[in-house]
Length: 228
Image (cartoon, rainbow, N blue to C red; front, side):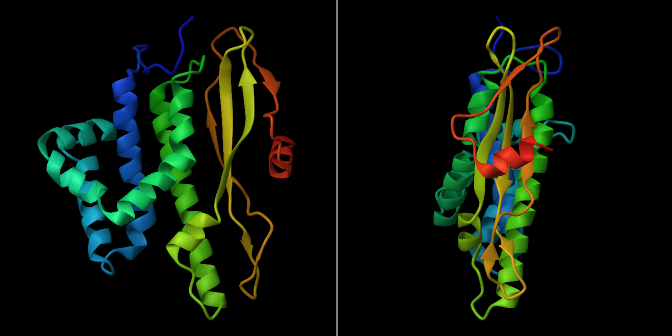
């Protein structure tokens, strides 16, 4: 039984590659969250500059994680320097809390979905979550006397696995993760849950139909989403 996501050409995805992809997506996350701080914080500017250079390093047709791998090989000290900054440490911890489990899942699934599709979907998911965080921060700051910080807005984000499906061989075939933030009322107070950003990872292998099952902790928001 072949386990884990494969490349679009059917070749295996190595554990080393997963780690390189994780580092690249971590840098993407830094950029998504810090882009609105450009020009206001020297450390944020430094992180944005190095991250962007690493993600676009070398040949233009090179996959983004391959660009980071090549940059790391040539400029390890420069990359390490930004990763040691306090703000990077905080955002890296946030990244691993929100997305780390998804990278483990890619190595455990029985699926025909290629890793390249996971790249596309994860980056879209990250972009949507970052947009929600910035919007929450902006609306609260606009409607209350006390501005909301990026740290406060990030802390209100909730990301949970909301559904799993197994194939006929009882191998994990599909996972859905959802992220919500509170809704900002007209007076700046927070209430309820926003519309969820959802990432779906995996599809059953050809000829197999998944058996769906609820996770052990099935939240109200998960039930709502599953009914749609």
